Length: 171
Image (cartoon, rainbow, N blue to C red; front, side, top):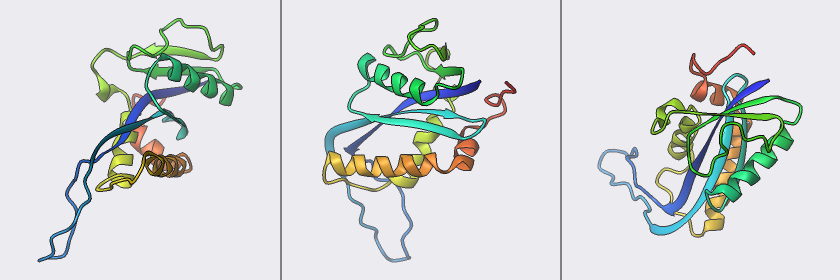
């Protein structure tokens, strides 16, 4: 049995410049753009062992959530999964039995601080997407794939970002 925490992160071509280092007397140049094109990264993290499962999808809705859970269920078919998530309208409800190996638990409404998967997005934005402008949605997707693959292969970082004392269970 494994406990996963699931969330969606939105990544787009609308940049938000942030502070950066520059030598004294040098004014840094930072690219910025305001193009409203987005992709959604659906991810589930297991703080216990640092496992990360992600899909990049074009929207956040019930149809794409079903795609994510179908793929997640198949990838973890040998486990019983407890999936903790927020109460987004497109998420499966508690008691939904479409996936035999997944049971859903919802966090209280308006409490993103209770979902350790939120820290994944913070880390990715700070380390992979700060002060960048992408020439196309495909270029953004390439960087998102690269970032998620690196994160997936860095289990200690996932554990560090998500392994709060209340997320580690002896099951």
